[in-house]
Image 1 (cartoon, rainbow, N blue to C red):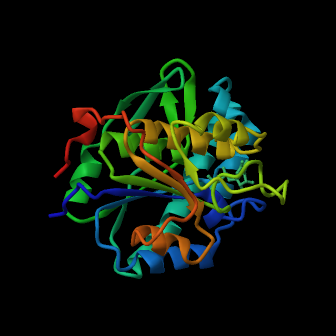
Image 2 (cartoon, helix red, strand yellow; image 1 turned 120 degrees about the vertical axis):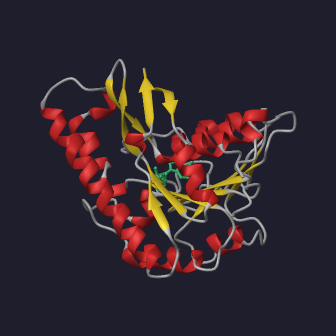
Image 3 (cartoon, protein in one colour; image 1 turned 180 degrees about the vertical axis):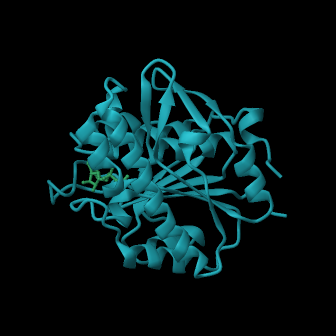
Length: 279
Ligand code: ADP
């Protein structure tokens, strides 16, 4: 049986595990390196992968993020689910080969929206998988919405949702840059990394991350919003570079700080429901 008071949620950003410039193209060496780095990690862990080039092109083209408005979008929904599960299987295979035991959970089957907000979520099977020592693997997904038909649940949002509801000790959001910068570092090479986000400096960090994004899920802005949601509720969060070889091992081993750390807010108190231990 696993002790759950040290639960970590790790999100594998689509920017780090797929080639976002080419449809349905995995970054196999990156996925294998991450699986290697997880091989000897034995504390409770939930993995979440982003969609990257397995989801964003279909979601953007069909405009599904604004709801279901025509039959032509149904094909895109089916295709998105098909390709997402391909990526899930690639990650599962890499983990299984290293004797890690992932079990996939598709949010479309356990989350329901209304007007873009989460109305229902069933986490018992994930709790049970964790308790027996399996490694739940979730992903950003399309979910049904009572009034809009369909909606997009980003990997970052499911990380904060599950992190808060299961009382995770921390949430690690991995992507392809070192953390949150004063401006998009891919466009502005002189941008400066923000090492720490607190209840004091958060408005300027929100502004810095709000630049335009071609992503269906809101890019760095969405990541920062979800990280703040976690910090405000007492959960530590990091945005870090999953492509940088030593960053994940250092975070897993709690060996110094890398990336941008969102410090839990001082006055925040997890509600009894959030902090309830799950074992
Ligand atoms: P993922 O797909 O891994 O969730 P995203 O592509 O959505 O990651 O977000 C990461 C990208 O956000 C970076 O590649 C970077 O180009 C962009 N970005 C925009 N603004 C910022 C900023 N202020 N700091 C860091 N990255 C930023």
